[in-house]
Length: 306
Ligand SMILES: NC(=O)c1ccc[n+]([C@@H]2O[C@H](COP(=O)([O-])OP(=O)(O)OC[C@H]3O[C@@H](n4cnc5c(N)ncnc54)[C@H](O)[C@@H]3O)[C@@H](O)[C@H]2O)c1
Image (tube, rainbow, N blue to C red; front, side, top):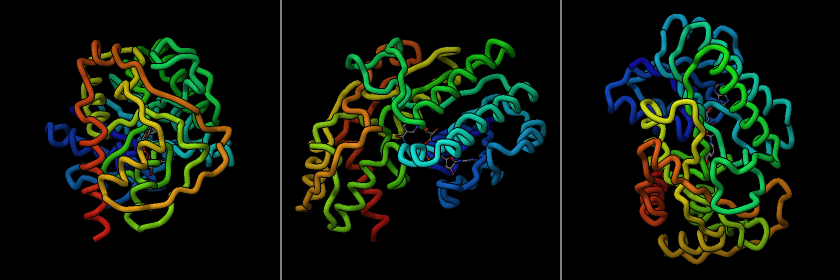
């Protein structure tokens, strides 16, 4: 199949591109390299260095004639979204509409949209299922949720198939230490460099950490399954930030200090997903426990620091 991955030089996107190519798909990447890296690009993919807000994107769509579009390119930094909501909305909302317009005009069959747990905001109950109300507490959560609506309205009006995947905190190889789910790569960077780690709040906040290969697998399943539906992609398990930090320290076997800083208002207190719907309909389940995923990630970062 001819497949586009926007954001395909980024953390999750580049891991997805590698998998799609290993499955013999013909893969095109659109990325402006704002946070993505040239070295992440798979040499067997075709690359367009472009901003997703650029209207010339339609020419690429008309030329390449995609069957499937994975839309992963985004402004992913919650703090940046608070400081500059206009730029966040430009990339995450206007950029998505531009991609959807190109899908409509070039008759793409299906879009698979990467969304986020931030769409739910502070949950009323745990594990959060897909029926939980959405009330984001950051502009990032709001812009990603807003794009979900555009995706589903385009689908209704123009018969475009879609699957929306809301990820919990993704970690793994190629993750940058900036960004939404970056706590594991930030900790690793600090632990490997023997620097103290900052934790916002008392460290009791919990998250559902999912290894990137499991997220890639959910994206692959979405080609065939889960049409016109929203799915939570997480592990269904939770770990506190402090426990995570201690766990990582133990695996690396280093003594590192912690500085506790003030809680941030835009941070969600506790979050983990209920994933029964994804496991049932997407015919998918996470394969990596936190320890296995962390070991793979640590090995990758250790090799990078040599
Ligand atoms: N990492 C997580 O834990 C997490 C959690 C929930 C959802 N997500 C979603 O997954 C997707 C991928 O995130 P990631 O963690 O791989 O982030 P990333 O920053 O590594 O990847 C985003 C990619 O998009 C590109 N990009 C940004 N703005 C662009 C623009 N205007 N035009 C073209 N390309 C642009 C960047 O260069 C980068 O390669 C995003 O949509 C994000 O919202 C990520």
